[in-house]
Length: 409
Length: 225
Image 1 (cartoon, rainbow over the protein chains, first blue to last red):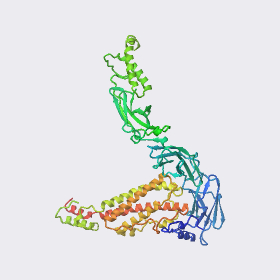
Image 2 (cartoon, rainbow over the protein chains, first blue to last red):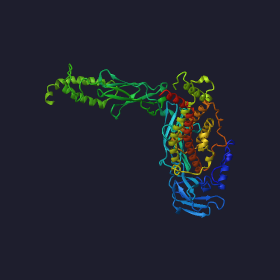
Image 3 (cartoon, chains in turn blue, purple):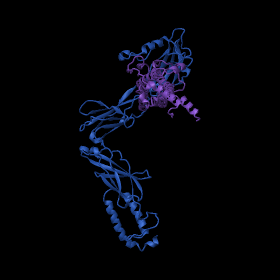
Image 4 (cartoon, chains in turn red, blue):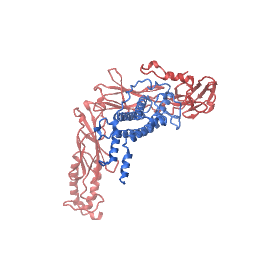
């Protein structure tokens, strides 16, 4: 008798399915195209099983005698013929199959178990869903862009592979206002993510969790409680400009604008700057830039192109005590330091300048100073002052070193 | 077409062109109109593009269904697929189709196929596969629009817009999962066959719509070119 879900009553009246007459047709066993019609039924139809379990299946042929019999029938699973010792003929029209210790399904659409006639034509099929129930999702992290939306990400359960299609559903509710909501926009930032675009409330914590469901069961993550104001991020600072500082060959000035989306909200922004030499992949990060919109980078190489990026963290928004979330880095802005007037370490001819010490000691000391600056590059006028101090010190020590030098060269 | 005024061959060639375009040019003052030619070409190009897109989509989808569906020469029984519009047709019948019938058959076929494609309830498929399917449906919708454009240009009425619930060919409810997989297989196969056939249909239409080259050739030969 035909298996499979029918339920025509469940269908709308406008869609009377042609299925019923079709299946009757099949049961009557009229062959079509000469290639063997669907004249058999496999039981069970589309079962769901746990990995490692066993399955007993039967293939029952239909047809008016002397129609097809169980003689010559065979099974394939995912296109591979199963060894005959796993099958046995139960009666004149039924072939049985015994599978043990099943592995997880080869594809999420189900393993294809097929009953073939002697000539290889397909008589019937059944999809086997073999897998594991989902594990508890964990590691939920969320962030809100400018307090307007909420995006969350999570990690599926420890083993990841359940072999079955697992549906993840992100749920959320306001702590003291009972109603569960379900997130609708999935896969926004990766396969296990969801985006809640609107209707978010401030000042009351949200409870957020993820439910994982598949054919074998479901699992629920721990509940994450968070306040939107504690997970705010924003756009990267716009209008980042990098320019030279007069003729200074080891400095660049970076200016930016605070992100406009949050300009109406009171917060103490933190900024971070990173920069690298054009050909390098190593970024240098300047960390403690608080609530300024400009910074001077020092200790740079002369005549070099630098790429600079800035990002913002709107922490303390509306008095939130938590560290906010860093924005993306701004688009890289490039600028070059002026070429060195005097040759750098290992450079060519020297040029004398009035009042300056001779090239030998200047080269050596400049090298030392640059090395020192590289370690201490940070943003404020302090470096400028220190440079002047160093120059003053150089003037003083030049007088004492001048006599010793020729021997040491 | 460079015709010399007053040249008898030239006049004949011009007349032939005008007469040929009459069905599509109800008012003769539209001789500047390129006619349905460009949109036929566009439709032809679209069928080739879709054919290419389908190849990738079908490959991925059949892998998702798993062996034996993705094996070459897989040939399961056609069951629910009986409701699909068949592209296969006798050669003589195909050649003798008039333009209106040819276009109507194409239009109706893709309407049916699009409806089935949209009904592919593959909740389990990866998000990527679902996106590819959606993208293909959009392209197929574009092809339908293009065919409609050609029919309008030629003055043929569009077949009645088919509501999504026509009983004759609406996709059936999900019977067993395996039967559904076979239906999916035949849907993709039929789509493929239709796109092959449509390319030939539109190529044939394109040739019919071109101004007759014969008169022009003779004209040139007569002048020793």
